[in-house]
Image (tube, helix red, strand yellow):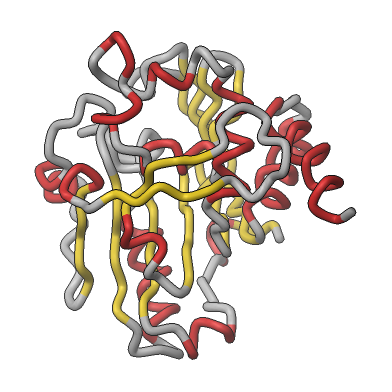
Length: 243
C-alpha cells in the first residue's frame, strides 16, 4: 500500500498481537540522518503502532559494512527508545540457515544472527534510495544482517564475498531464506547517489510504502519506473515454490 507521508500512521497488523518478540531491521549503518538512514520518526511510529496492540519484546538489529560497533550510530541517529533492545549483528551468535529453494540462485545457506530465527515478526524498514542506478529498498536492506566476518571476502569489509555469486542473485536468495513479514520503504524523500549513501541528490517524494517485502519493493520500482533485477529473480523463483 502507498500512503501520503504527511498522513502516515503505522497500524500494526493484527498478527503482532500474538507475537512475543518483534524484530525491526532499520538502515542505520551510516552516521548520517535520513534519507541515508531510517529516520527516528519512522521507527518511533512503528514502535508506537506495535505497542498499541502488543506487549511483545521489540528489538532493533543492524550491522555495519566495516564491522565496527553499531551502537555509536544508534546514539547519533537518536535510536533511544524506552523498552526497546538495540543489538549489533557482530555481537550475535550465528546459525546456518538453509535456502528453501530446491535450486538456489546462488547461495544454498546463509549465516545469520540467531535472534532473527527466534523472533515472531520481522520488519524491514528502509529509506528510499537509488544507489548506482539500482533500487535499494526493503529486501536490499536485509544485506547488512549478514555478518561481515563471514562475508567480507578479500576486501576485509562489506559483503564482497557475495559479489562472485552476483549480488542480485544473493539478495534474491536472502529474501527466501529470511522470510521477513513486512517491508516499509520510507519515501518522504528520495536519495540518489553513486556508491556512497552519505553523498547524493535528495528530492522530496512524500510517499510511504508498506506491505510484504517483495510486493513493496515491486510497488516502489513501478512507481519510479525503474527495473530492479532482484525482483525479477524472485518472481521467477516463486514459481518453483508454488509447484
